[in-house]
Length: 157
Image 1 (cartoon, helix red, strand yellow):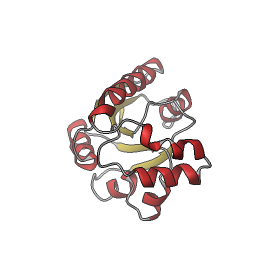
Image 2 (cartoon, rainbow, N blue to C red):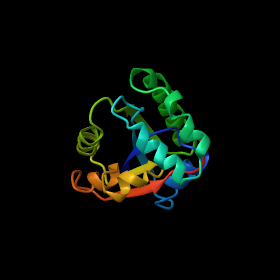
Image 3 (cartoon, helix red, strand yellow):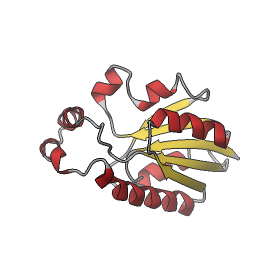
Image 4 (cartoon, one colour):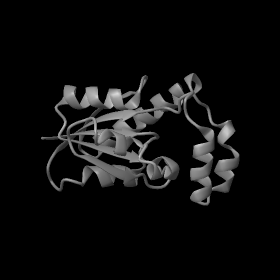
């Protein structure tokens, strides 16, 4: 069985689930999912720039209304549970947890703990972070010791 660590930032859509579960053809895949709720450290300005770059002006205007930090943990747990259920319904083994500390430290620990074959980072585009190679996938490539695949999530959950 192939083991993937899947880093996400929101609930997987059905298109996301189909995409990641079919990446390896007919080979069975076990997923270890890490989801980071929006934390206090999140920069609203960067998210607003990303929204504007994607033409989502309404979302950019409402960034301040989205819960962050402790208020986002319950929403994150719900998104994680929905994502795990969807992966299992697609026939994959799946377990997961919320990221409480630094995401790359949690990722490295889980890769080692699970004996992962790869890391898949599935997020919305983050143009500013990606331009400066500060996104999860770019930084993880230097830290985890297994191949890291960067994918963009499909439409909203």
